[in-house]
Image (cartoon, rainbow, N blue to C red; front, side, top):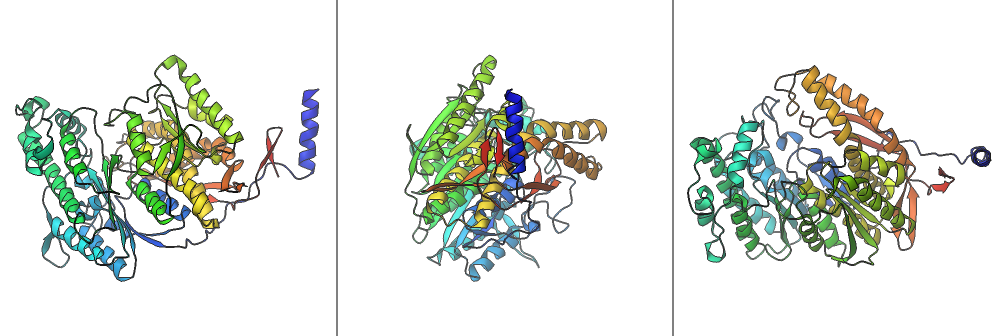
Length: 588
């Protein structure tokens, strides 16, 4: 009887033209308008390029970037930039920023790792201060920085965000000959506790002098870690160069005329131990001014800067947020690369964005942690999904963060796809390293929340917001725990290649992209269907929603020719009238 009633109801819906539908993805996109931000990326990975573009456009900004060859990173054996550069080109980037200033730009987000060292990976290896000038001659990184900062400071209308990082515990595998064995050895050397310095002891000279000492003041023998003296010398020289440049930058912006400069420093690949970073962190933290910050995460620095720039310019005065954890391990680091418990990292980011925890807040942050009890995993994420559905019924905006560090496999993602309305989220983060998940989720979510309160909604902004959600969800649900494993197995077992660099040995990269495209097209169907049948919040006062249109994914690629991350183009149909749910079907 129930089946006949359902069938009759469904037939009526079909006859009246109210079947599930979505607008077809557009072939061309409306051009972004609004104030311009001149942006020098950390490197050319998607988190530092495409996703920063999406976030900026979703807030009504236009993003201007240099030529790709000036900030691209090439791993060993890969084609170089201009046939000679394995990293970005500091001199070209320096002149590009000056060109933007001449053209009248007054908003800047600048990665110092890129401007001074050629990118994040390169910053871990560079030991010299010399910068080549095309046509002959050299200058130094410190002189380049001094000149750039002083020039930008001359225009009182400029708003400048300087992004920097605390060097991680070991350099990158597959760059300038770096091997996994060397990485492991140098990380073990770096993670060894050092003497803890405080007060007047915190100087660059004292911090760097203690690089070679264990916690008891006894010299650390390189051979005890399987290292040579040359390896340690190179490693420590790169750390010292980077620390001195960051301190010099902090001293500069502390002077008169730099009131409109903000500094955001990220902590990369760290540890809860009193490792080689801890004195560096303490020294740099002491040099921060009001408005500056030193937070966990590096690949999310641009997200945080764009979001905070918008918050400041929109007159954001802060807000309340309800925070709920599921999994029982929030009082621990989310992974071995974090230097603080998850609750402390979240609290530091809430403070940065001007948010205060309040149980009755409209804005919700739901966080899945690693499971305290493996036998209760389904109960942990089940409780989160129940609360997520309740928030949906109450029209409460939700930021969702998966800090489970792959411990739930695909089960949590599958359950979300079946039971939740993914497109209704303000933001989602779970892909890549745990150190950046908090900053990614909160920067996107808080920025969208503020935009719904303060911003002028446009078609470009709405579609860019949808891209931020689709990119996060699809890459995490479909690529990280499913397709990436297939790609890795194919590269390793079928092609005899290296999953961390498809050029060493040189394999048929077209075949790998073809496999990626085939497997993603197979795996995305349920997630895309969920998004296409979702509504998203288009206004808070008065509360209003719009329906997602169609989604088409194209041009799958490996930006660094390695399996770790992918890029893709996202075409969207125009937002539409809200989808309505009748007997489980979304109808017009």
